[in-house]
Length: 86
Image 1 (cartoon, rainbow, N blue to C red):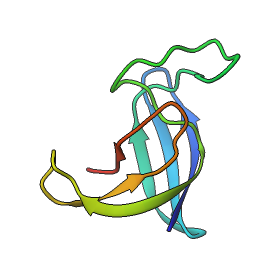
Image 2: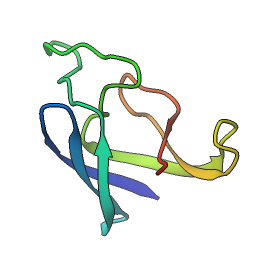
Image 3: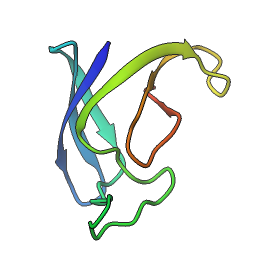
């Protein structure tokens, strides 16, 4: 399963469009986009920075924090343990 994410950033939030294997699934809402990455001006703020738009592999595993089965994004630049939840 792959997650395709396209984004539109507001001042304090980031709206996204989530597709799974090329099929639209839902809209997303994340914290502020901060333009992080090598050679970019932004600074990552834990739990307050949106992940970069892109295509990510996904596995579904049981989350110790949430106590239920949730998608886990793999190989997100500068992030680890990204869980999708409502």
